[in-house]
Image (tube, rainbow, N blue to C red; front, top):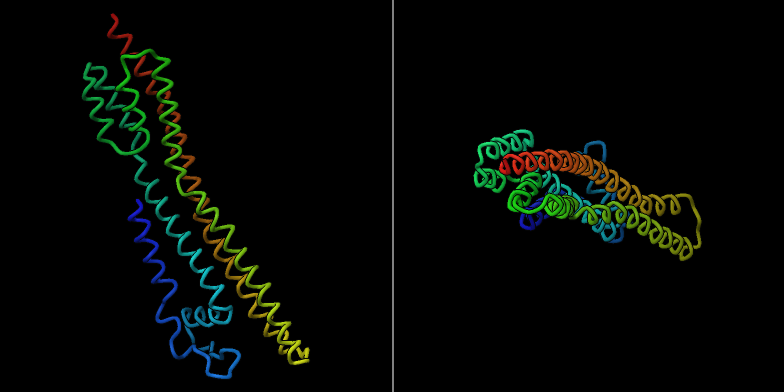
Amino acid sequence: MKRILAVLCLFFLVTILFPGHLLSQDFIPEAGVGNVDVEVSDAGFHQILKQKFIEGSAFFMSFIALALVAGLAFCLERIIYLNLSQVNTEKLLSDIEKRLLDNDLEGAKDIARDTRGPVAAIAYQALIRIDEEMAEIERSIVAYGSVQVGLLEKNLSWISLFIAGAPSLGFLGTVIGMILAFDKIQSQGDISPSIVAGGMKVALITTVAGLIVALILQVFYNYILAKEDEIQNRMEDSSVVLMDMIIKYKHKNKQ
C-alpha cells in the first residue's frame, strides 16, 4: 500500500501541479510588471488555473496544491484498500458452515485463510482456536476485530490534517498578502482603489483555493467513512453468525 500511495501521489503531482508547463512563457510577467495580464476570454481551464495560481502567490499556492495532491493520494489509497476488503460475506460464511457441517475443519480454515478482507481474517482467527473455550474464542474475535478496525482507519488522520490544513494555508496567504498590500500603499503614499483592490484580489485567491481543496477532500473523506462503517457493520454481523456456527460445530462433536 505504501508503494501505491507513492505512485498516486507522484501521478497527481505531475497532472495537477504541472498541467502543460505551469510557468510557461505566456504566463511569466515581464520585468517591471507587477501583475500578470492574460486574455481570459480565449483561455481554457488550465490557462485560467495557471493564471490564478501565479496571481495568488506561487509560494502559498504550491503548499495548497501539495495538500490537495497528498490528500487525494491518501483518499484513493483508502478507497482502493476498502474496496479490496469487501467480499461476499454471505457466501464466505456459507462455505465455512458447509465445511464445518462436514467436519472438515481444515477446509474451513483454508477458505478463511485464502479469502481477503477483515471478515475472513477474523473467521480464521476464530477457527484456529475452535478447540478452546467459547469465552476465549469470543475474546479473540473481539481483539482481532479491533486490529482490523485499526487497519480500516489507517491514514484517516492524515486526510483530516489536509482538510484542516488547506484552509489554514489559504488564510495565512491572505493575511500575508494583505500585509504586503498595505506595505505597498504605505510606500507609495497612495490609497487609490486600484492598489487596494489589486492587493486584496491576490490575497483572497489563496483563501478560495484552500476552501476548494478542503471541500474536495471532505467529499472523499465522507465517502471513505461510509465505506468503513459498512465494512464494520458486516464484521459485527459476521462475528455473531460465526459464533453460532462454532457453537453448533462444538455441540455436534460432543455427541
